[in-house]
Length: 66
Image (cartoon, rainbow, N blue to C red; front, side):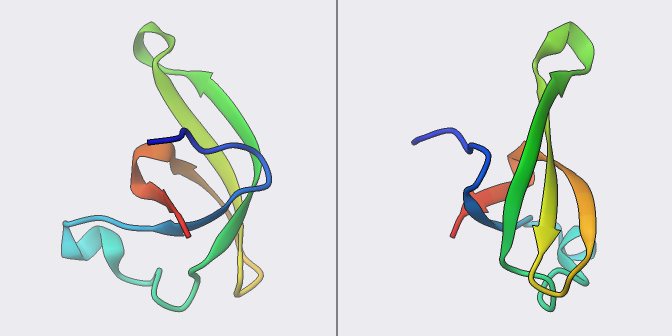
């Protein structure tokens, strides 16, 4: 599976219902930037502009290509 990149159209997805709440109205979104850091530099965070106009930072593990 290809890693996400700046400019990709993505949807937020989690098997955990409480994480998923609120994203039904936001999906899809476009990745504006990516940063890598966290423990051992392995965590990737994406700045996402959602279709409802909101801007958030999301852990890349919760983003799937649309």
